[in-house]
Image (tube, rainbow, N blue to C red; front, side):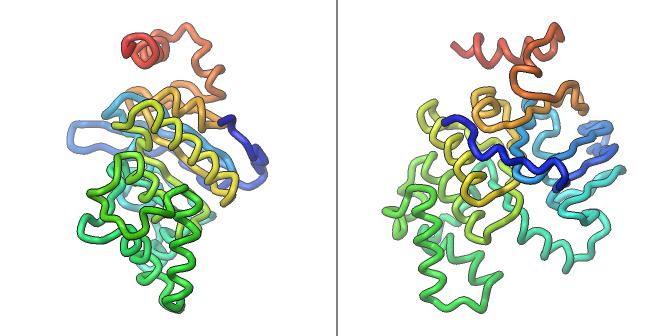
Length: 259
């Protein structure tokens, strides 16, 4: 599926990261990161495993604190929010975890009901059921409503994880390695779903990945992370039309060495 709904509003800055540093002991993961993401834009952050991609989005949603620098999300400086303000912000930021983060002891219905019951207590049981059925239809898995996570394929679990995030209608989606561990056909389905989510729900998204096909399929813009810094940004073709050996080697590893 080609990227659709490119009605990006470059006058509305949704996420702004400035001079972001984060270390874990002697491991200097992020070393002066700068990134802007605009309304309805999909930005794919590319890099090898361990380069700090996931750390970046965990800081954006307040799961980790930066050592220095600022992260502004929906007009709010994340690091300065109190607990109540941070909880309110997180309701507008959907986080799709790499492992889907479903509760194994709960059915699909119960997994999807959980965030609604916790955060939208005014809803009736009928309204909760209606929203569950609607979001399952959006991800193409209406038939799984009474199944357990153990009965689902890896791709289905990914879709249900995305559905559970979408059920609160967030303004921002953060995808952490959405195609990791999936076969090529299922990966294409997840890429198409990411584009569909943006098209239908008008989300602004950051897609963390080391999968070049995912980045090319979903990203309006690609940012290449290497040794804790962004070394190039632009469209997919702009980033990979380069003589930079670091970027060329990453491309070759994905598209040549994996054949």
